[in-house]
Image (cartoon, rainbow, N blue to C red):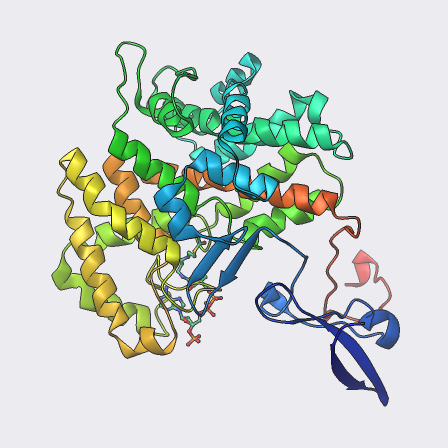
Length: 428
Ligand code: ACO
């Protein structure tokens, strides 16, 4: 019996519901028996007050601007760790020993190649296809190539498919880029780090040796770390919902990629950079701030605001901190960075943004760096998908391993016509 109870009076009945406490964060009212006891549902479009699952992976305190993976703050992980180490942490719950990390990295490295037949999928796309369209298609198609790891009731199958997804995602994303620019696909080089290998597969060409820039490699790795997981966001919830029916992991991750594509979610970094370029010079910023505040104008400051963070997004802090190093190391003087800095300062001092607690989110600065590294804006969301894959598979594994897991099936408030009789066509 829980210590706290929530009381509900409905239709003359008084009912009590347990209030569950997590290890930290808000209490949760357990209403699982509500419908059976009262015949009523709760109404919560957008899930703003609803916990859809129990999870021990990632914790966010949006008011304080805190993001923890398995308890470790994102800033500490980004500064001291690597994407491979964070991936291990998310999948296994603890930081690895040196041997564990070496073994994990070795395993991931040995799964980086794609089945050669998958090349034909790429050739079926138009050259100007959005990389996210290619990612949805190719990742979904993996289920047709790796039958030997799709028995989701077998933990070993789940582990192998998780490793395959994490390992193959850089190859899939890099090939989507190569296809769009008409260059030959570059096969993985397993002597390089996860991130170095991705950079080489994206920017290397067979005619030349590719030398990985260590500052860019570190920045890219940090970008992967800050995107690795983010609690029950829209795409992760999509993966869980798809997986709750028993669908295979490749299909579930393809569903997550589709959800991530939208401009209110993963597509926002592309939209943020496009907006900064459109603003162009600092003198035009006030005009755009006024537009963002105007209720009659659909324009919003992209890269600003977040469903959960009502404070500075801690991931934005990490990314903002690396912009100067990356631009400096590449010798790039991009005026868009100055526009971003000034726009941030102006918005943070404007009563509209203060009152609504709108702060820069992870997407506000990431586009500036990714563009400096050489990625076209259309690749930004694909990079996000690459990094988020580990979070998706960790959450999917957590869900499948939960003995209380059920198929996800929300209910509705029906407002359509009540039952009526069919009218033949000649009488309508
Ligand atoms: N610019 C101007 N006004 C904004 C912005 C913005 N970027 N974001 C929110 N607001 C305003 C809304 O108009 C609304 O005002 P109102 O209360 O007067 O109607 C209020 O702030 C609350 O906004 P909602 O849209 O209700 O908040 P919600 O939690 O549903 O939306 C979202 C969050 C979608 C991220 C929103 O802030 C937004 O559209 N931001 C721009 C897109 C973006 O950067 N997305 C990336 C999110 S991070 C990620 O996915 C990795």
